[in-house]
Length: 117
Image (cartoon, rainbow, N blue to C red; front, side, top):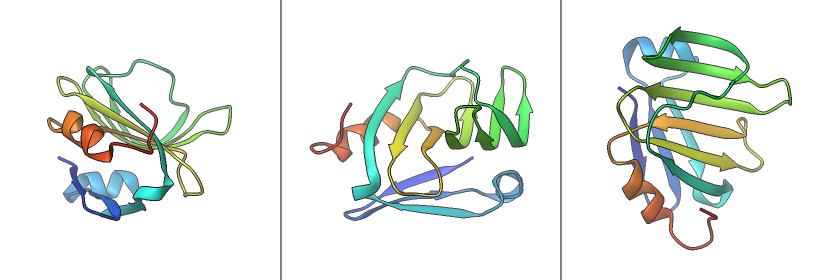
């Protein structure tokens, strides 16, 4: 399962095993300054994410990269039954990160001031 680590200057995602194959990397790091919005969703997002490269098991898991017809690029690691962290980024390879994690609420709180919620 994807692991999220937040420190003073960066947010790090670690994609283990087969998830790394689906997203094309084992790590993704973003500067905290690039995070413009942090949102906590209660769970699974059923919105259309766009064209994918990765794995989707309908209603259970979505892992990979997605490009919406509007041009929004997303890095996704979603699992049903866990809170969903949506981060909007500026000036990065991806426009959004969608990651399921039991501690997603704590990450939103830790990002604190300077980030829209």
